[in-house]
Amino acid sequence: EVQLVQSGAEVKKPGESLKISCKGSGYSFPSYWIGWVRQMPGKGLEWMGIIYPGDSDTRYSPSFQGQVTISADKSIGTAYLQWSSLKASDTAMYYCARPSTSGYFSRGIVFDIWGQGTMVTVSS
Amino acid sequence: DIQMTQSPSSLSASVGDRVTITCRASQSISSYLNWYQQKPGKAPKLLIYAASSLQGGVPSRFSGGGSGTDFTLTISSLQPDDFATYYCQQSYSTPRALTFGPGTKVDIK
Image 1 (cartoon, rainbow over the protein chains, first blue to last red):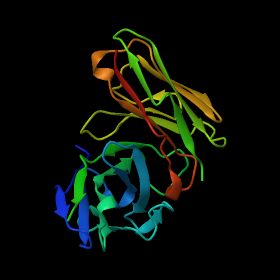
Image 2 (tube, rainbow over the protein chains, first blue to last red; image 1 turned 45 degrees about the vertical axis):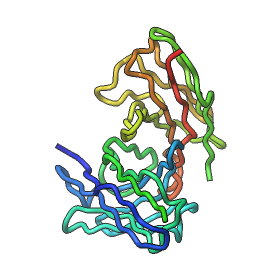
Image 3 (tube, rainbow over the protein chains, first blue to last red; image 1 turned 120 degrees about the vertical axis):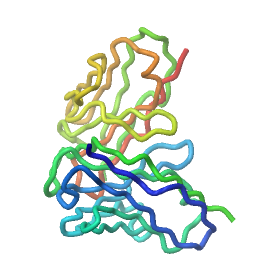
Image 4 (tube, rainbow over the protein chains, first blue to last red; image 1 turned 135 degrees about the vertical axis):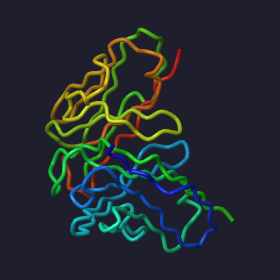
């Protein structure tokens, strides 16, 4: 079964660092992009960025460039989203997602496999 | 970057109603438009891709249409399981800018 399993909920203080994970299984992890999506409490979905684990090509939404780091370790089939200094405004649910087709990016990409989400709470 | 809007932002409907949600792009995106359903506490679920193609396993009461800048998601006969929030997402742009619409919440009248 193809699935993405995300790491568990986190509670952090402002200024702390954090790295959450998204582990893919049941498919060739290096061959499929992995995207990250933020959902703040009671709000909509926001596209954060995407990585191709095969060569670590990473693209960030302008809104998130410089705010987070997306990475992947293809040897263990895991993608990551990390913060160096969390803010209260980073409190949100974070989802990873995989597109339906493998290979390099193409127009019309469709995300049909989603992780269960990781809730990040930042509070003093 | 391409901006996406949806209307209405919310609607109340009854079981059996026909429901239509509209999504508009700020520039032409051809048919590169996907629809997702999200229930509270759950990950989004793909319903429709390429504007009108039904994802496998999705009931046929869901349909999508449109091209260019204007798109619709129609539920022909609303069922109890359909009360959720629906998002459109354009996949025309580069990987850094796959924007979602703001969502449409469908709840029970």
